[in-house]
Image (cartoon, rainbow, N blue to C red; front, side):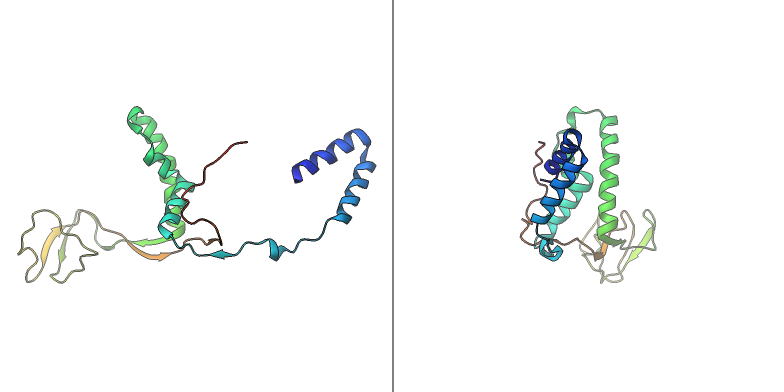
Length: 176
């Protein structure tokens, strides 16, 4: 509507002069009612589907789902590498903005020897490699840290407008 009004005023000024456009503008201003800003604002809430919301963030910022659903076998490695740089940057922004992550072994570096006691938390530490029933019995085990692991310390997902379909990862886009 605003675009139509802008074009109307432009052509009124162009063909009938500025005075006629100002007259039209003052007439339409008298007819319009003031809009309460609070009435216009949608009510926001937290999503009931945070996993879908995270997918939405990765898609909208890094186009991750488009990339993962694409058959990339037809592309050259250099083309894929160039695309991955943009995807990586967008997805990294999502992680940095919405999640506070720390590593499980924040003082140890990958590739170094570490000790795991016998009463370790299996949700934080996964033993891999040459395992047997007696591997951790008694005093624990020594091993090489292959991956430091990640823990989410804080989640800061944005709120969504009330009534918004929280199962939509990315809306279809129609160019008009």
